[in-house]
Length: 339
Image (cartoon, rainbow, N blue to C red):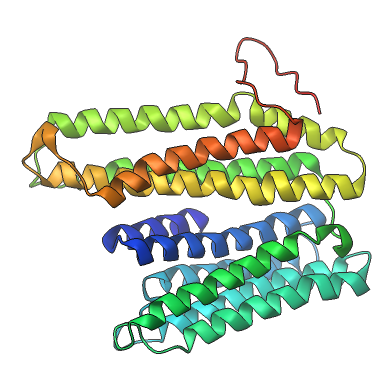
């Protein structure tokens, strides 16, 4: 479902690429990220196949599907049909509400957990609901920026609430499961770039398979492989080992928050931005007769090259937060990370 969600974010932003669309895509990506964080925390804290958890998982997956379908109309509602912004807000309320409610109920320190988990979710949902009730941006142009501002505040509330995870009673029970979940979501984001190689090229029966298109696709695949290698060669294993060695519950929770919840989102954003720019590049190359001299617009350049820079910056910050130093990963011998 998250593969579909990431793909839909990239598709919608690519069709209407601009400053507002790019920022809106980033904010929506952050909201989807918190849905994933809730799933990871819930699966790490509780057995996913016992009690009410399977039902919660089924309901939230369905809500995520409807939320993803409403993404094209989350900011600007189209005439006819269901109100897109309200559907988006309602689905996000269901997903985050169920996750936070179950976590708060099962938290060992329920009194603090209820306040620190539920209150931020209620505030963020109120902001998203107010944004959904604003006038349509096609009628009142300034409302698009106001909606974007309210969404950004909602994301800020979610991230700020994550800073208080130490006092919520929620900790990382299984370091291996936690690390594996976030490695998986990063694979999903990089897989979005692979999909962009085919979808973005506009491969159809009436388009010739030009050499510039083949060359661009090969270069894109090589860059994706390099991005994958930078993380999975030794850094992913070093992070998991460091999490295993961190025995203090509060320190482990802080490491999980900083290294995985915050900095892995930077990696996800970089990978998705790269996929967006790659899709735009390949679409232009496939549809243009300019061949080797095709030049996409400046914002396409910003997405493509900026995505790679954001990804690498996230890797550097991740190493520094976890190991307090930065060095290139070694591939000739098992990694020896030191905290």
